[in-house]
Length: 448
Ligand code: ATP
Image (cartoon, rainbow, N blue to C red; front, side, top):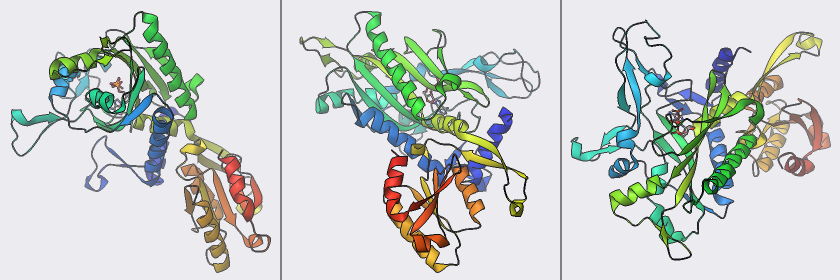
């Protein structure tokens, strides 16, 4: 499968099957903005829920937070975003197209070969106004990262939760960046969601002190990527970001890059932010953001930050799970020997938007429908289930394969007598008969 082609196929499947739609499409859309349909929303929620459980709820050294998007604008002076959070922008003097200078290889316009302006700093923060007067006194910003919501709440968390170092604060939420060159479907958008952790530790005496914590988080992130089903050995590359390209607050950054169909690009980042943010906020706000150590000494903790984008996670999972298989039709009635392509999303089970689909073989047989509805009602207590009685069974399987449903349960004429069903496995396409009374146990094992 040509890689460019693969991307087009994924975008088209997402639209056709209710994962991701172009934003405000009835008005002609808005470039590089996307809406998540029923299955996309489930997929995203499964990712966020699992992340929250793994990194916040299951750990004794972590607490969660949900801070506001629009913060006191002083925040951005202190954090350095007002002066530093910019990309170098160049414009073609001929066709007026704009580019990020650091992403261009040639010195002339890639579109028309025209001469480019000198780079100027373009701040990526979205500006807005608070209240009815649009004057400079009321300027505010949409947060470009969730991290600052965590730093400004450091004192609140200390006062209320009394955590001991090292400990972390995790947050999931929207962030906004007025990107110069968004694109590649949901890879780079101006509105996106982050899952971020600020992990606070005592100021390191030696480099190896912070390096050990950094290494631990590097492994935690790799473990998370494996849970997502990503082929870490083949598709994930770690890139140590050079000093010149590092964010203004960082002493060391690793980018985890994923082999997307459009090239190797950043999926997640891991950064050592030192005590930069807490020190800056202490200075600008006048608040005491220190931590009192065992020996009574006041210290400013240092920070390791694993930063994960929700949409890039969705995209990596879609790319990794997408598969095409050539099937040969087995029977003359289906056109013996004819090759048909099966498109299947092989999501890890926990990620699948629908876990089990339940079908009556025919929709005009009330007894079958009734029995199928009863099975559906039982299964949906424990699993995200879908009931489908539309079209022939082959079509229904194809649809469930495309949305990545691990199992389909069919109630047919034999079910009436034998009180059993057919369970069809997404990956092997094998079918087995299971007694209705044993279904619960059967799926408990499968989804363990
Ligand atoms: P890039 O180099 O791709 O612009 P970045 O290094 O600026 O990314 P960070 O500031 O490290 O990104 O942001 C942390 C994470 O947030 C990224 O690893 C990515 O998963 C996500 N992210 C950042 N910018 C965007 C965006 N415009 N659209 C979608 N996700 C994003």
